[in-house]
Length: 183
Image (tube, rainbow, N blue to C red; front, side, top):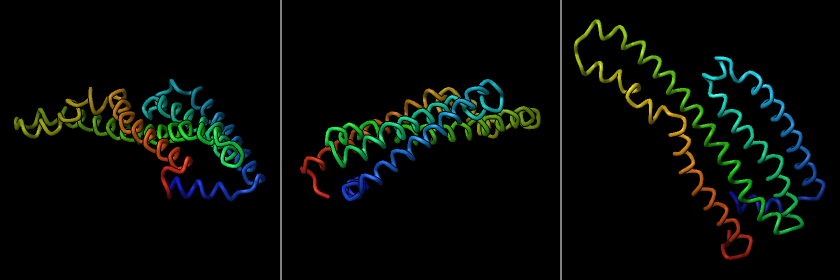
């Protein structure tokens, strides 16, 4: 993927690079507007249940990717090797962090739904049955709330996957730029 992107950018015109930069800045303005609106209503119940803090974080990552990494990438590949190399860690880290936060958000929302279902289900099941195994199955989400249902715990695990991937992809691209690796 990275080798094909590099070969693609070697053959683009200056007009195309400027068009991509302008488009990315326009999309950044749209994202900033969206994040501002979301930030205004962050304390309402519907946004707190939908992990609004994560939405703002991955919107910021998207803004960094679109406003800094994309222009550096397109300008750097056509004119300056240093700008191109600088764009790699910024672009990969913001893009990968955005994706990992997006997945973390939807995982945590699904966990919250299952946890709420488990809590409501256990309320009436404990009166009906004395079978401990049935109650243990319903208690799984409640027991793991501090780990698998905790946002900080999930974000740390996402970073433990994201950081090595960013380092690997950046190193691979830099080695390709200097001709050590071949496509």
